Amino acid sequence: EKMKSGVILFLLFFFLSSLSGEQEEVVFIGEKGKSILLPCLGLPDNAPLLRIQWNKSGEILVSHVNTQPLSSGHLSVLKNGSLSFTNLMLIDEAVYRCVPVPRNDSLSRNILLQVADGPAILTADIKPATRLSNGTLYVQKGSDISFECSSESYPSQNLTWVLDDAIKASITGSSLNFKISNLQPADQGIYTCRAQNLLSNRTATWTQELLVYYVPDRHPNCSWEEASSPDLVHFNCSWFGGYPVPTLQGVPEITENIGVTLNRTMLHDGQKITCKGQHTLKLPGSEKSCSFILKAPYPVGEPLVATVEGSNLTLSCTEDKSLPPAKTVWQKGKNQENIVPSSKYIINIQGPVITLTIVNITKEDEGVFYCWSENVVAAKELPVYVTVKSFADRSGVVVGLFISVVIVVAGVTLGILAYSRRDRICLSTAFEEDRTDVLSLVESDEEEVFHGAVPRLPPLSNGYGPTHTTTMVEIHQIQSSDHEDNVNDTDQAEE
Ligand SMILES: *[C@@H]1O[C@H](CO)[C@@H](O)[C@H](O)[C@H]1NC(C)=O
Ligand SMILES: *[C@@H]1O[C@H](CO)[C@@H](O)[C@H](O)[C@H]1NC(C)=O
Ligand SMILES: *[C@@H]1O[C@H](CO)[C@@H](O)[C@H](O)[C@H]1NC(C)=O
Ligand SMILES: *[C@@H]1O[C@H](CO)[C@@H](O)[C@H](O)[C@H]1NC(C)=O
Ligand SMILES: *[C@@H]1O[C@H](CO)[C@@H](O)[C@H](O)[C@H]1NC(C)=O
Ligand SMILES: *[C@@H]1O[C@H](CO)[C@@H](O)[C@H](O)[C@H]1NC(C)=O
Ligand SMILES: *[C@@H]1O[C@H](CO)[C@@H](O)[C@H](O)[C@H]1NC(C)=O
Ligand SMILES: *[C@@H]1O[C@H](CO)[C@@H](O)[C@H](O)[C@H]1NC(C)=O
Ligand SMILES: *[C@@H]1O[C@H](CO)[C@@H](O)[C@H](O)[C@H]1NC(C)=O
Ligand SMILES: *[C@@H]1O[C@H](CO)[C@@H](O)[C@H](O)[C@H]1NC(C)=O
Ligand SMILES: *[C@@H]1O[C@H](CO)[C@@H](O)[C@H](O)[C@H]1NC(C)=O
Image 1 (tube, protein in one colour):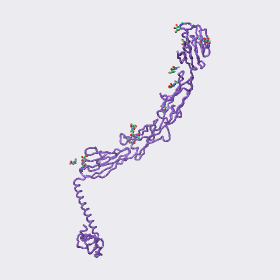
Image 2 (cartoon, rainbow, N blue to C red):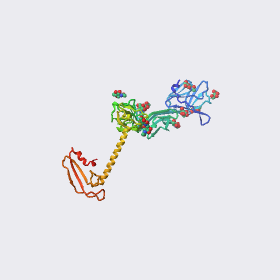
Image 3 (tube, rainbow, N blue to C red):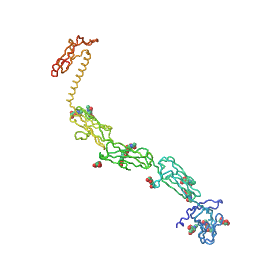
Image 4 (cartoon, rainbow, N blue to C red):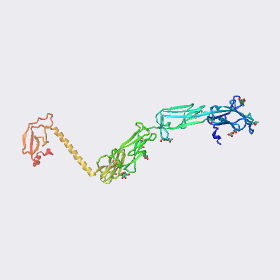
């Protein structure tokens, strides 16, 4: 039945004591432009209505003998005596009273008709902000934003700004503005300005989704992961901490996907891998990137190692160049078999250094070992040749060492002696006290041999060594062929 297209919107009974204290007033609230029906209070039950009169503010509004409906302008009296308003106006606001015949005075009441208007012309804005194609607004984090809302209502209204379900501001009045300085992600959400007519409770709302965009503080993060095969690599690039999620541009293609798998054929030593991040807010400096330069492996170590049988030999290999970090292993033999750790082979990895300890090394361990290093860019090996000396070799070494010590000692002794007798340079019969000293200079390719006295050298004053009367220089000229014979003269010194 719909009450004639919802003619009565608000039908509320407020029983208020009148000033006389005897009569109670009934309040009806209508809205401007709408319809309302005021019932005739005081009409006895089941009695035929003979005459009807409606008073408005103590004045006769309509008096009607006929019980047929009566219509006049925007109001009419129905068969049952009810007073009907269409297109209610503010001037209709008044105290009404039905005066029927017959009448039950104990039921008769005054009716207060109140007319509410609005809220109307609700306007709101959030500024400054940028509108997306779907109507959502966005602002940059840290900005100062003002929220403005205004509306008209009669007799009064309540204006409220709500973020999601939280009241941000409220007022009874025609406009409500507030500001948020240094807007933060927590300020993001659905903003509603609600105007409520305090008489009719009719509400009007304006809603707007507001997003707070921000660029991540940090740079994108480039990382890599091992892939299923050594000639593949999985590069990741992430740029967290921004809203909306920024787009990433990797190599070789632009992708929103943050992972890319690359094949060795696409990579080379020294290649720069860059990941660029681009944020919707194309602010200066908002495009950030991370990059790294690919480096082929380069294992470093001593290529030649010698040791003695029975000892423990530790080979060391350093791989700190490669990027992404290489996998480094020790291999042995021409077939380059990977060495499996055992009681014989101890492998130790400390940072970039990988060591191989061969326990109780034997002659059979002699040969080539490889430090094999591989990353996605390339593979490189460092061959290490190991020589193992047996115990026999070791005794030989000891004897050799002894002989060399003897030679050194003898040399030193000779040197001291030569120094102490530096007035005479003795190359012949140097240890015979009674003889004159002879200096033999040997030249080849000349026939003659000169013998002659030379001036005496001054005697040593400090008393080193015995005194001598003459000093003789003997100059031999020898031929290559008879060299042996002449040597005989000075054999002691030569030795
Ligand atoms: C009077 O009549 C109208 C229409 O016929 C109806 O809507 C209304 O409820 C009636 N009022 C009373 C008090 O019976
Ligand atoms: C209705 O109005 C008339 C005219 O002013 C007045 O004489 C009468 O007493 C009023 N009736 C009631 C019940 O107020
Ligand atoms: C008047 O109304 C009252 C309350 O409904 C009721 O008790 C009384 O009987 C009625 N009187 C007549 C004459 O209808
Ligand atoms: C509008 O678009 C933005 C960005 O694409 C999205 O975050 C937001 O949820 C959308 N809003 C609506 C109401 O669809
Ligand atoms: C106005 O609305 C707010 C929020 O709904 C409420 O807290 C406040 O009491 C209301 N004021 C009045 C006068 O109704
Ligand atoms: C308006 O809302 C208030 C609080 O909810 C309530 O007391 C009052 O009766 C309502 N008024 C109308 C006309 O609905
Ligand atoms: C980069 O990403 C890696 C892997 O997710 C992580 O371990 C590292 O801490 C990140 N670095 C920074 C600076 O966020
Ligand atoms: C790299 O990205 C893949 C997917 O693309 C993901 O499964 C993996 O966890 C990411 N690794 C790191 C370290 O972020
Ligand atoms: C890497 O690329 C080469 C040439 O494009 C191809 O032959 C090879 O199968 C690829 N390797 C993998 C593991 O996809
Ligand atoms: C060689 O290594 C083994 C195993 O670590 C150890 O028991 C042994 O003492 C070491 N020998 C020498 C001479 O260092
Ligand atoms: C080292 O090896 C030799 C030959 O295999 C063996 O005789 C010796 O007992 C081993 N020494 C140690 C300490 O294991």
